[in-house]
Image 1: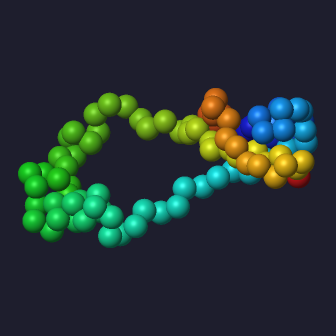
Image 2 (image 1 turned 135 degrees about the vertical axis):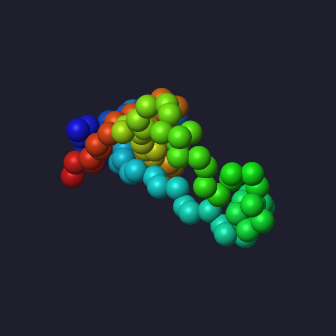
Amino acid sequence: MVKIPKEQNRYCPSCDTYTEQTVKEVTNRSGSPWSKKSRKRQRKIDNGYGSFPFENPANRSRGGSNPTSSKKDLQFTCTECGKAWKPKNTLKAAKFEIER
C-alpha cells in the first residue's frame, strides 16, 4: 500500500521555486455514448462482426492473469499561484491512499 501525504513541498514549474503543493488523484470521465468510436462499436455489436461481441472462451483464457497494479494519475496544485500540473513519471501501485 502506497501512502502519499496530502501536502508536499515540491518544485513548481510556474513559480520556478519550491512551494507547498496539494495532491489530488484525477479520474477519467466516462466516454460519450454518441462518439464516433462508440457508434462504430455499437454497429459491430448489432450486426455481428466475426466473433466480435463474444470471443471464443479458449482465446480468452490464454496469456496469463491480468495485472493487479495500475498507474495512478496524480495532479499537483501550487498553493502560491494556483496552477495545477501532472508529473511525467507516474506512480504504479495496486493500492493507493492520500493521507490527510
